[in-house]
Image (cartoon, rainbow, N blue to C red; front, side, top):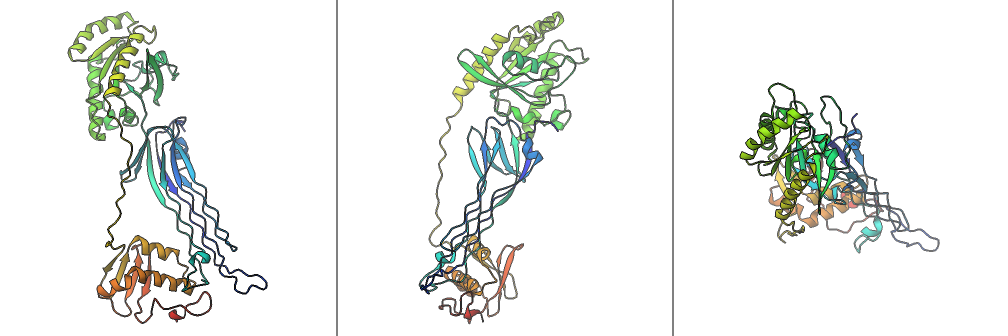
Length: 454
C-alpha cells in the first residue's frame, strides 16, 4: 500500500455516558441515611487536530473506525463516574471534512486547529441528584446518553504558495529539488511523480512553499492517467508555474501545445470542482535549456508566450541556469498575492436563543388516535429512562406533563387510550395515554415502584 493517501472515509463514535447510580446510604444507627448515588461520567469526544508533522491520511484508510472511551457508571457514597478520555485524531494541514453527502463541515487550516467532530454522551444523574421535596429518596437513576456517531470524508488539500503544473517527465521534480531542500524521487527514464512533494524556497526576504503536483495528461479531468487524484492540491496555490519540456522527443508535442493542453485540463477541473483557477497568476518555465536543441526551441517560442501575457523564464534544473531569477519572480508573485489577500476576521459565535414562547416539541397526528411526539428533549428523556423501573417511568411521565405534552395531545384530538409514539420513525417508544392517571400526584409505594402505574 502506498504511504501517501490524501482522501479517506472515517467512521467515528463518541463515548457513551455512564449510567447514574441508585443507592441509599446505610450505616449503623443511621436509618435515614438518604440517597447517595453518584452521577455517571461523560463520554469522550472525537476531536480532529491539525498537525503540521502529519502529511498523509494513510492511517485512517487502514483503520477507518475510531471510538472514544465511554464514561463509567456512578457509585454509592456520592462517587461520580470517571469521564471518558477524548480521542484526538491528528490530520494534515489543509484537511477538508465533509459529510458523505458532500456537505462541508470544516476546513482545517493552521497548526493546532481543533474540531470536535462527535460529542460524547452526558452521564446519567444518580438518585442523589434527583432527590426533591416530592421524591426524597428516589429508587432509580437516569441512564447515560449515547455518544454521537458520524461518517465523514477527509480530503487533504496541500497548503502551498506555488503549484508546479506540467506533463510527466517535464522536470518538475528536478526543479523542486534544485530550488529547495526537497528530495523527491527522480528517474532518468519517462516517469511521473506519484505523490505531491513540497519544498521551501527562499528568495531574499521572502519565503514560500512550492508543490510538485503529479504530471497531467490530456483528459486528466475526465479521469485519464492520475485523473483528478491530485489536482485538488493546486486549489490553495496563489501562483501556478507551468513547467514545459523543451527537449521532448514525443511526436505532436511542443511547448505551445503542452501549455494549451494544461490550461484546458485546469479549466475543466475548475468547472467540475467549482473552483475558479483563471485568476491565478501564471509563470512559464521553459525547462531543459541545457540541451542545445531545447534552447533553440525556447528562444523561438518565448516571444509567442509573452505575447499571450505570460511571464516566461528559460531554466535548466540540471545546470541550475535561470533558477535564481525564477525564484525571485515567483517570490514577487507570492508577495503580491499575500498583500492583496483579504484580512481574516476572528470567528464570532452568534447566540440566538429561542423565543420564550417557542415549543420544544411538536405533536403530529398519524391517524386513528395515533400520535407522534417529536423533539430533542422528550426523545432524550426517553433514552435516559430505565423502563424496568416503574418509579423511573413515573418520573418520565411527570417530566413530559410539565413540558406540556399532555395538554398538546388533548388539543391535537387525542382521546383515552391513544397510542403515543416518542422518537423517530426508526426508533420510537410507544405509550398508551391514560387520562385517569394524575402525573402530578405524589408517588407512593416502595422504592422502585409507582402505585399510579397499577
